Amino acid sequence: MIQRVDFDGPVILGAGLAGLTAALAAKTALVLSPTPLATGCSSAWAQGGLAAALAGDDTPSLHAADTIAAGAGLCDGDAVALLTREGPAAVRALAALGAPFDRKADGDFVLSLEAAHSKARVARVGGDGAGAAIMAAVIATVRATPTIEIRENARARRLLQDETGRVVGVLAQIDGELVEIRSPAVILATGGVGGLYAVTTTPTQVRGEGLGLAALAGAEIADPEFVQFHPTAIDLSAYGGRDPAPLATEALRGEGSILRNTDGRAFMTDYHPAKELAPRDVVARAIHAERAAGRGAFLDATTAVGAHFPHEFPAVFEACQSAGVDPRREMIPVTPAVHYHMGGVATDLDGRASLPGLYAAGECASTGVQGANRLASNSLLEAAVFGARAGRAAAAEKATGGEPVSLAPLPDLPDAAFQALRQAMSRDAGVIRDAAGLARLQAEIAALETAHGTCPPLVAARLIVDAALARQESRGGHYRADFPEKDVPARTFVTLDPVQACLRHAAE
Ligand code: SIN
Image (cartoon, rainbow, N blue to C red; front, side, top):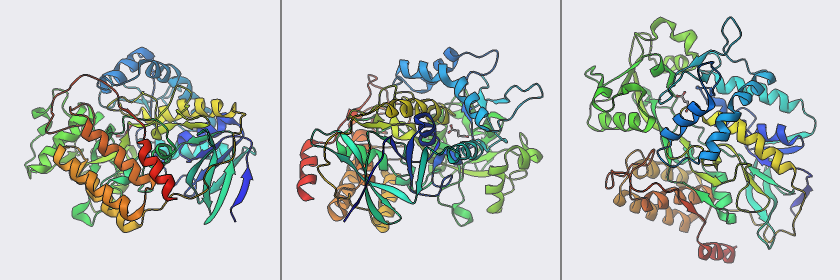
């Protein structure tokens, strides 16, 4: 017997910055988090901060121009204009909640430069601790709001839909028990897809759950092939390994750290005039190429940061030290790692997905802001700006819809299969892709689906791979060795094949 709960407000799946900002904006909300708050979400791990036009010599339109240039032809201009216009207020709102942004003596924000920004505009906390500090402030506010209910150890097992397709709630597993939660709106804020890959900077629990749930419900998905690889995850494979891989923030390159190979050669001069501050996808491919050629890749911060490392970049310092690397004196071994998903559940500017009653915000959404390649430190900003918009819009939903047509939980993926998927995704849908590898990966995912059922992580992986195979060009984070040039800029919009959806329902 499945317990039923009726909730008169949005149910929010995920408790990163987007989810909790949405909850605060909605005022009344039920937040389901698979892990204890502040753990298991990428927001809390963010080292960079929020990019916003906060400096006197900066403007939202300059920030928008940089965002659009990084997005390689696929940004939605309206979404970018909105993000960059609302950005400064979003940063100040987080500061008002208690996020202790680094300040100058006169109270202005300390602003850092990151790659592909024309201005120093990244508001940071404690050097590289923005995510944890911002989340601590937001979590404290949420916990002090009696109309926001939080359930930890709670994850979605399917979206509930009535016979019209309207989303009418969620089937959740809370402390091991299935609960049917009925609500006027569901907001997906489940984060990205990093956990689908063997080398990622995100928590491994973040594995395309929202994307898969939405796609299986028939929602439109946008740009799933666009996965961003951070160039400088710390490669601890020679030091016993670490999964996920710790990040060496881009701000280290903003401070003048140099990428070198084993011979000590500063190799970025071979790849791009902006060298270490070239767009993220260019730097990631350069590092991939150096490593693939056996020359290795290292971040040399010994001169640019040196003795200041422990207090300027404490999180990176701790990660290096824990493996026996002293970044004050030694180069940091680096590797590209999955860091962010530009694609996601297609939404309008208020987070509305294509199905009535369904919203998405943050990394699992695709507002069109991030294009083919996200500009550094635009992700927490997007989570704050669009999370609030989604929360307000979802709170205004009153219709409750009809009875759910199915209460059957979607299948789970056993860990061994999940690990096999991660290896295969890194091998064939990574920094460099081609038709042969993607086709092989499609077959492996199909075999996993046959063996284990159509579960959200496999659906998310399939969406990425199918779209990567279909996009016969290279653009932003998507690079095809067999189609290295750009073609006509066009976003991808897909819904799951209705035949497959029918088969799935028939099998239940
Ligand atoms: C970083 O600090 O390098 C990451 C910033 C981001 O991904 O936005």
